[in-house]
Amino acid sequence: MKKLIAAISGLVLGALASTVIFADFNDNKNTNQAGTATNAQKVYVPFGQKDEYYLFASGGHSGQMFIYGVPSMRHIRTIPVFSHDSATGYGWDKHSKKMLGKYTWGDLHHPALSEKGGEYDGKYLFATDVGNNRAAVMDLKTFTVKDILEVPNTGGPHCAAFVTQNTEYMFLPTRFAIPFGHKFASLDDFKTKYKGVMSAVTFDEKKQKLSVAYQVALPPWSFDLSDAGKKISKDWAVMTTYNTEEATTEMEINASQKDRDYIVLFNWKELEKMIADGKFDMVNGMKMLDPSKHKGAIYLVPTAKSPHGVDVTPDGTRFIASGKLAPAMTVFSFEKAFRAIKDKKFAGEQEGIPVLDYDSVMEREVNPENALGPLHTQFDGNGFAYTTMFISSEIVKWNIKTGETVDRVPVQYSPGHASAAEGDTVSPDGKYIIALNKIAKDTYLSVGPSHPESMQLIDLSGKKMEIIQSAPVDPEPHYAQMIKADKIKPIVVYDKDEKRPDSVWNQKDTSITRKGNVVEVHGVALRSKFIFDGKAARKDVINVKEGDKVVIHLTNIDLDQDITHGFGINSYDLNMEVQPGQTQTIEFTANKAGTYPLYCTNFCSALHQEMNGYLLVEPKG
Ligand code: K7E
Ligand code: CUA
Image (cartoon, rainbow, N blue to C red; front, side, top):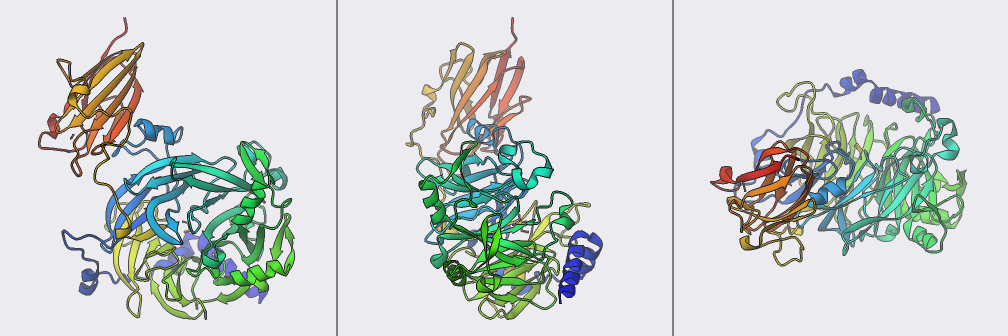
């Protein structure tokens, strides 16, 4: 039996590693059924009507968030989050420039909608950056980023973001173990000097700020995916971990040696209490708890080796782990886990953390025939789970209580996550699920050797799952969340009465003032002109001297739906967007003398082309 498991995991590992075998699994003809007339009707949203759901899809290493409408699968908008975006001037205006700081790119994996009582409330969207260790919050009234937080002591917070039932916390565990503060340390000292730090991040809605409440110094393992408990498990969260072998090189082989890794099960209410009781040390300005010293909040649950996803069922009674190297999903029971903790049913300790006895927590192992590479599971609210199979390129529907396979549908190809309608709430809608496929191959018109990823919309309302639409996404759909459209209430124009120190609403009140070598402009943009100084002979010209610091505040006084202006300065590498009623600021040093046209970059009126002026930078001396 052991030999067989070894053989199977060897095969799976080979398939993951080798593109040759990988191709064999996937070279079945594209069986996409999305082309039929009935399916076309199901996704057709007539002109003038709106989609039923918003889909917020991870933009992966583009650092952005993509918004789609479901069921049409039309791409509606991109929100720049962790990387610069010249379309919106994100990264050049003062607020976004400050938020992005020294970073120019990000790797956005898992979006998370804010929740109240375990339901999406449609207010905020969170995301994390594996590339540069950041968390961000977007306001869904404006679909813009409000705050970005850099999290210290962390090497790629991949698990996140999943929020607790009332958005109390999101947990950001590290993917790559590192010494505190990215300090230099030899890999020979991996066991003693490297840590797998998990951060508990909170969002203060009043201040619109993210902050780290505390951190936990876990062993130097890789933490992969997390999910928060619900209802009976609401004070708990789970995350998968791999490389408990603590390998420091050739991870592909060395991090897959043991037959079992762990699910980390932790009680965040208990951790909160420990921090309040002062059970922490300060590390680089962070409250750091050592779980081997302070016990009673964190436990390890053995699971099939190298797990990737872990997902809590909508009723909060179970968590399901998928071992990417095992052909099985494991269903664990929270109730059994709580009992095992109470009865101290431990099977030893790992790095000072109690390990729960596998059989005391496990409810069943689920093995759909010939299904390979289970990654992530979603739910429909009717007692069924939907697990993506990366290697056998399909979604398998199965009964959570019995483990029985009910249906399966091939997808094109190699799904990572899937996203079900209201899928992470206590009451999923069960109407749709979207396969987020890593490989598109022959799906779309070819654009050369590298293709976009693909999303396939699957109708869950009939007896059989049915693929009804497909859309490219570029890159990369790690995860997405789907929310009922009527839960989101965007504003149409920015509130004129909101207190903003640098806004100007009347052309007469515009001004250009100089203090030393700082030139400050309070201007307005309206169809179809800029006015920087209403009293000047040329109202649309900014005169400065070489070396001046220039601060331009621009208010869009067109309070009409969708009349956005842009502000670009030719050859100065600057652009920003000013939405209706918004005030934006851009700052720069005029270090190039000369004559530079400035113009509106966003087509706003019949005379948009005339919406321009000049920046005149007088040479020194
Ligand atoms: Cu692509 Cu959740 Cu980052 Cu799985 S992750 S596939
Ligand atoms: Cu304003 Cu174009």
